[in-house]
Length: 182
Image 1: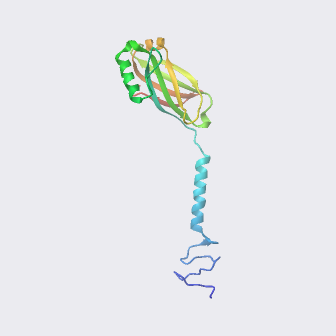
Image 2 (image 1 turned 180 degrees about the vertical axis):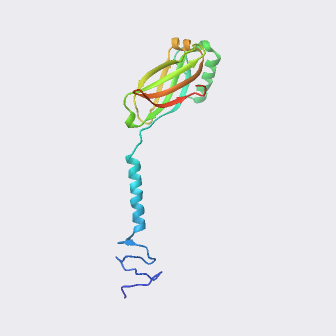
């Protein structure tokens, strides 16, 4: 048996030779194309996991009217919640305040010293009503914060026209979401 074989393209196919049967470079038993692709994929995955950009986001803001007992719904159903909210809008005498449910998230780099600020415009006062509270980063499945207005603040506000919710870290605003009329 000859050390040289002429399969396919007639190139040298001995183990450990420089090229395979169609002239592709080889590195031992592996083709350099596969080895290069494997190195590139491992590098890409490693770089993507190692670098997490500092980010903050307010993804959802839900303003709810609450009754005199502090409830915004009578049952956990979304349909029931919307029906109860419509009922509270139709009968303002039953309204006991306003509640904001805010879904937000921040990266680990920004997790220290956070404050959630809510600014409101209503029919009652010409000036913007503003209040804030400190918040802490929680696990991914529990990123909702609840902020309630008491009866006196709600009476000063009147009917809610517009709102803006922002997330602050020190003197810097890092995320914001606002209503259409803000």
